[in-house]
Image 1 (cartoon, rainbow, N blue to C red):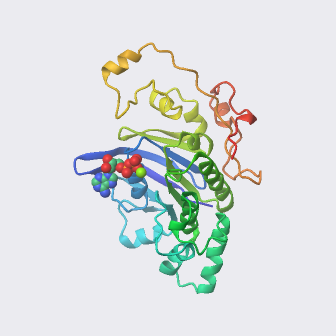
Image 2 (cartoon, rainbow, N blue to C red; image 1 turned 90 degrees about the vertical axis):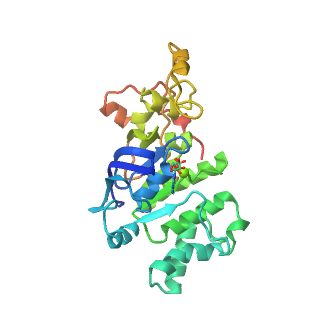
Image 3 (cartoon, rainbow, N blue to C red; image 1 turned 135 degrees about the vertical axis):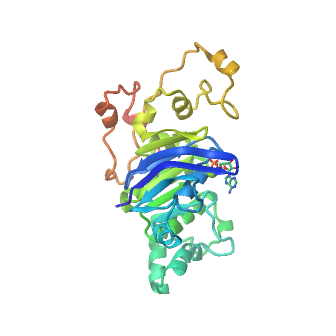
Length: 315
Ligand SMILES: Nc1ncnc2c1ncn2[C@@H]1O[C@H](COP(=O)(O)OP(=O)(O)O)[C@@H](O)[C@H]1O
Ligand SMILES: [Mg+2]
């Protein structure tokens, strides 16, 4: 049913360069979260810190009672088995066909027979819609198919947590929509905790239960999707609505002159909150909430036109 990830005061720097400081958040078991942020804000570093590939300077990452930041190599090895990771480039071995790529973690980490391995590999290939492409090489297929193959490989050890590093990078909007639907369908089926790192605003607006925004070395905000999509906080508002007016500039923060020039400029109203993408079989996911539930519970009036059925992005 997925496991919770509890991050407390996480700080990571390389030499004198602080990547992020004091990041705290709880990723609830079985839920889908999106972590947004401009390029270079440390999203990939954050994921690597969660799986213990990078050691933080300070802070803790608790998963099932183990602190990834301070645990022994032995505990880390055990806790890593809970994770499936889809790396940004798919990270496929170019000289192996898809079948062997997907089978790789099973051959490395288990003592399963080739018969058992075949059964698992074919089951995951079917889950991601790649049956028939087993004997293709990564170089022979489209970027979208490579992502799916990477996802099949991330799933072979039945992870409780699946991390996606920019699953939509390099994909056209239609492929991205299909991949987003696949992620939602997978979450409904395997109920793993999922964390998607992206800078695709449409993905952030429609897919997750929770959204976080990394900005300027800090976690600007983290919470339920409806909380961020109805937020007037300048950085959150600017990023989630892809606006030019706000504190975020072309390369870094805007300087005082630029901000002064914007003073008094009327912001457009917040756009409506779209319905959350549902599994394609029409059954809600276990962690999915009623549209508008968070806003009602918190006495927040959602932007006009929110949760209208015709706003759903076509898959
Ligand atoms: N292994 C490393 N050594 C030194 N600096 C790194 C390393 N990995 C990432 N960085 C730096 O950390 C910052 C955040 O990188 P990254 O997490 O890749 O950003 P993004 O949000 O685009 O994924 C960048 O400035 C990058 O140059
Ligand atoms: Mg990255």
